[in-house]
Length: 186
Image 1 (spheres, helix red, strand yellow):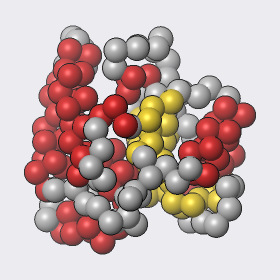
Image 2 (cartoon, helix red, strand yellow):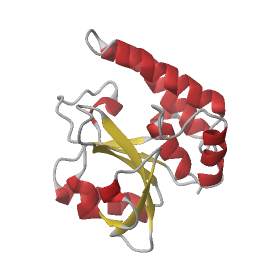
Image 3 (cartoon, helix red, strand yellow):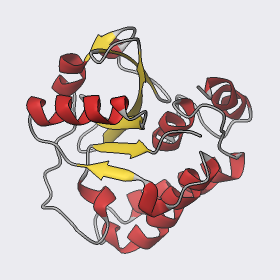
């Protein structure tokens, strides 16, 4: 995994516990052989600041910029394009466990959005590192809630999953998903 490159980026001050860069941090840590550039973290942090500023008006107006950022991360984390990134919305444990097992069997690098008590509607992306079977994982991100530290099962993760309240949006699939996956690293 690229945990060492993530730690270098923490040391550089572009990501870490008190930043709004949990999505790129989760993707970087589950991507062996690759890393994100510090400039990518800075762009993401600026984007999140702009998005939060639009929360009361039209936050979806900057979706094209977010799509470009996801594409940039996919490029740095394996030479992929935005269209290679897999997005899925699940609403039941059966859907969730089936989807995660399928992606892991095909060696996708998987991140899921979890809901954190006290943070309102904000989702917190975490990467899944498999621990030898289809049921056990270790989560990585800028920080992990106490209840999900160490070895956790799919059921535990599902109980914290962020369920998207908005109707599906076809043009920008990342708006209504709670699973994101990068293709296998080559």
